[in-house]
Image (cartoon, rainbow, N blue to C red):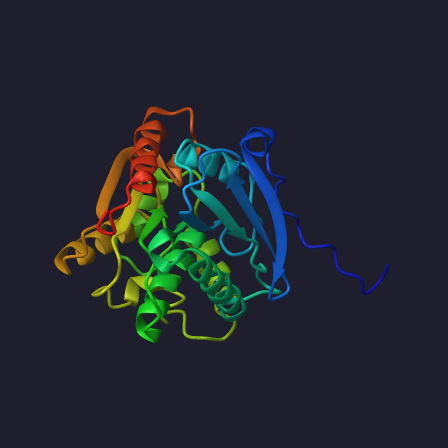
Length: 274
């Protein structure tokens, strides 16, 4: 029918292995669905607030569930996954409004020291951006941040990108610049909440970055890790030279298995400095 729009793509359903181990509940916050998966056995009261990738334009995919299934296995961590509105209908302002409310609710329930922020690709940018926003607003920080191949710079300005692009079978600089423009929705794409590569990193909780070498984002991830180390952050940088974009979601590969074992160790660790 003329004048009608196609429905927005839907997130991939929670797969059976996760449903078997977790109780799934759905809520609506700021007009958006928020999925919560609580371990049926052994819940610790710790939480992972996870923002999915997809260039801010594509919904949560099945590989995101694979990543979460293996990252949280036997950790007792409860998973909270907000389905933020995607560009071009959604933008960063709306996403942060949603995430602030979800984070505040989790902190009120469990305490900020029991909340980890995590995300992959674009969702990694949102995870780090949240930590920057909460620090700057004087909000209690999360325990730690887990970043999987994070998208850190909407402007795609790192000089190493032309050399990296032929190595990456998935990402293209021009496509990402356009996706970033839509997500910024008229705001400065160098704003630290849009491109946290430009944020001051002093005073952030431990940031743990997992990055592959065959990924357009590899140079930005390494730069972030260097800046964090110089600031005494206390996080870690795990680099897999043959890993592709969000290699941790390819859970059958050796590099993914190695990294996900480290992630599970971090989620089990009660120390605020890990």
